[in-house]
Structure formats: structure tokens, C-alpha cells
Length: 80
Image (cartoon, rainbow, N blue to C red):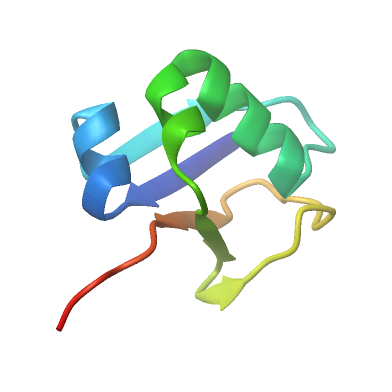
């Protein structure tokens, strides 16, 4: 299935783009997607935490993705 992935902050820098169009297996979970992305972009493994949103709502690892879902990778933000 095809997914559109938006990347923010350091995740965007690691991938080198603000978005990705990615082919994934059918019946893919958020955890499976993250494993696929960490394999393609090993530097993502270095991030201590990374929030995943699907269709503008935070999603748990077991959430089953659907064709044309919009996924966002949101790294932790620090500031003062």
C-alpha cells in the first residue's frame, strides 16, 4: 500500500526531505512502519522518542495503517 509521510524537525533532516511517499506491505502497523523506516534510515534509531500521528491523531504502535493514510513523524521539541 502507499502511504504519504510528513517529517518534522530532526526526522526531516535525517531523511533529507519534508515528506516521503512510501510503499509498505498491506496490514502494516505503526510499529512495522517504524521498523521499515529505521531500516531505510538508520539514524532514526538514534532518536530517543518519536511521536507518530495518523490522519492528524496520535497513533499507538499496534494501529493498523490503511491505504492513503497521512502519517507524520514528530520528534521531541525542546525550547525555552
